[in-house]
Length: 213
Image 1 (spheres, one colour):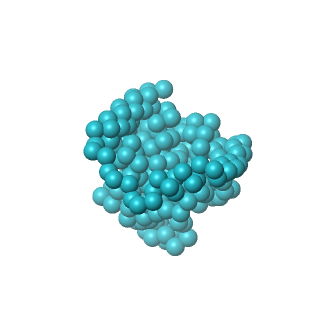
Image 2 (tube, rainbow, N blue to C red):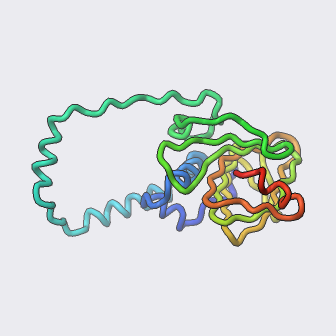
């Protein structure tokens, strides 16, 4: 698999630092599962962060912190309940994502369907699978926030660029795009959206009240 499109270094650094919300972490982790070079980059950033912490001067504990920590040693450990994995989730999703609750596929436009992924903690970013049939042209749209797309199967093109399995696409409020799925297989992607989509053109304005991702 040849991966041509990656998250930028700022996004990868934010992921390594743990400063992204859960929905965005899911999107980056899905790309990392397929991309060895980005995994290596994140691992290097984590090592740098660890070294910086090791060189930091120690801070004084708050009063009673040690006593509270020692008291918790005798507490029974919490019982971890293993979550069953979603049996029909795409194979190339990270294992922890497959343990989340998946909704049903629902049609949102001709030849396009989405399947919500219910995250275990609330946050501003929604995550879902998006499936579009081969040859489908997605209505031109813009964003009020951030959109991260990780291609799992199939491929689409926008602005002369091809996005296939493993590729990562990023959109924000400055992006207006009109992706077209390649002929042949369905294109299935994991999408993380913060904000709303704004459909463009006459058809987009007509369907805006009825189609929300």
